[in-house]
Length: 424
Image (cartoon, rainbow, N blue to C red; front, side, top):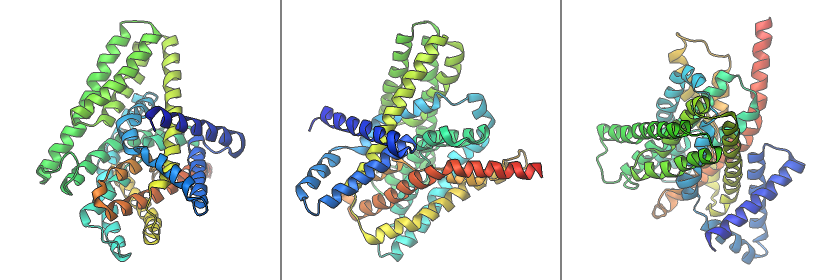
């Protein structure tokens, strides 16, 4: 089956599921598509008990889709740029301290907390997962997914400052999470950093190169594109320039072995703020916003459809399923600790909305990035990979469906409670 055949089938399914969701189910589009895809997958697995050939055909189709490559080497660049394009840089600067702490120290703390608990939990269930691979699991499940978060926050009604914290952190912490993941994968003897030194200084240099290089490249590319946009007024060319910036810029970052996600976030912030204000006419702003919103919606639909379909690549095991369910509150607790650290550190200098830690914790959704990183674990690791992948999938499905669907209600209740308290 060729690339265009797979693309045609996925686009058709995404369109059909979007229609069904919009017409009858009426959930947020991305969550609705994922749940319909998941339900259809389970139905096909059930039918497979009576018609193995049909299930084998569907399984073969899903197996042909390289989820990790599709997301990490392609879709993610466009999604991050589209998300950053609409973040107000002035608002982000006001939240810079807490965002930077949550996106860096928070990810590292969460990685070790989840890694430590999962190590003992897996041992208790008779799953002999080595310590270093538990840390890899902690690294891939700790970052909040900007794709999942941005889609939900559009309708959550959170205060602007709180929305900026969640959005800003989710845009940056996936880049940090990927760097931590790569470092730990290298220590385990795999990945692009395998075979290099892994002393604290070596890891710090890797982090500096990956994260710092990504931020620097994003700034350079974003500024270059901004100057080009400023020199003309022709929206067809300007839209094409932004598309080239993302496509070529992300590939350049990958070839330089620096963080492509962070580069795209910085470039998106620059074009969405300085570019929007100083280099675009009103017509160009409208066209660029429309173009990137459409790209964002299409890729979001495809991504969440793929998450629903990925159940076919899982190797189900009752102990791992139970371990995954137990790890859901563990992951939430680690998230709460990671969120509470910057709030505690910064509380003497600024005030926080009552209940903000709770919203930041519940709003830290896990999504496609975690699944993609789990799928990137070498197949040679056999049981280790299967255990981590299934546990990751359980947490991601819970996060998107339960946390995603209840976040709006949590925000509304928290704001109402705060308003009552202030009035009293």
